[in-house]
Length: 170
Length: 295
Image 1: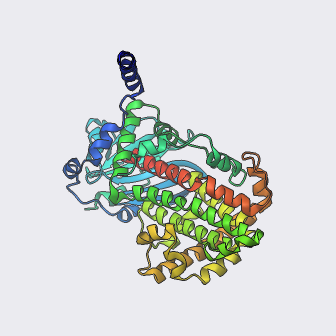
Image 2 (image 1 turned 30 degrees about the vertical axis):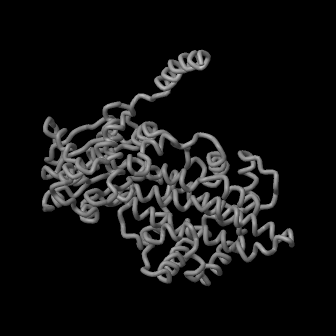
Image 3 (image 1 turned 30 degrees about the horizontal axis):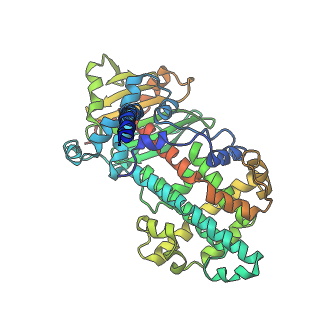
């Protein structure tokens, strides 16, 4: 009996140490995972405005020109994205998202914007993206996928979108 | 609830038979596939961004989109996983069939297992169909958009192109031989719902296939193959692919002692899950591309 007690008294701290050492720090993604799988929070975060169909947004993208090919990539509710290629090489991504319906937080960054492109508030984001906000609702973004595609190229391609047409989209 | 997106991407292996097979197939689509693993690494590689705050925002948006069932990304992963889950089973059936041809005492197995080529063909056309349906889920277009899918195949790259390359090589050319298109055509044109109703993959995915009843779904599977076969034929001929060239290259990465191509194919079928592996990589890339555009 004494032997068993001794064995247990030795093992218990060991087991505690192993269990402590084995536990991983929480993942940086755990909070958003919990928030977006919790039915109550999902209900709260539901968009107030129904998103525009991706197909509706297609009409406002630039067309292939000057050696550049504009090819479809994704089309979802409230979102459409195209690849911009030159000689088969991916140069940039072009996107329109219905921010009001999809991700309203994305519009915050335009409040501090001191820049405008084509008459719309614009921001540089990270090292690869330039975005502008049309009608306080639609985010238009050009993202470089090659170092050859500069911020000036992004600004130029943003102006190739039919921004006036998009601004008229109710 | 299935596994979180970041766990799926973090758990993708960096070695093993699947990765070796895909490395062995690099010669088919040179430089198209890097084994992109790890959620943060995927975000960095796809977007080119290094700022941690921005990576956090992109990751959170990608996870949010993935967890919204109406967006289709989660279903796409499930489809890729499900199409792969029959691998072992089909592999075992094909192996039993080959044994029954070599050993007469096992000939009774013919009654229990489908002919290897037919089983292989059904496996192939189901995977092609799953690729189409998953494409529609990821891209948000109706599930019967065969035309959109075929047009997009021309623009396939990275993991998606590697998956189609592996499908063409490992599930078509190697097990069925250079005239696989005629063979599959023959099997598909004679398919009846009874061939599929008991198939473990078909029974799980049939709810997501257009076509209404089983007969309509069989027709849809046939139509899908009819539309993709031209792409597959061009893919093989433009690269001068043969079963032997594939075996020769994959052998540099996987120790295959047997020269028999059908055994080789059955072995790969049982021991690799390239469809799921590259499928998760495709979904992670698409989500990242969208997330960075939406934040």
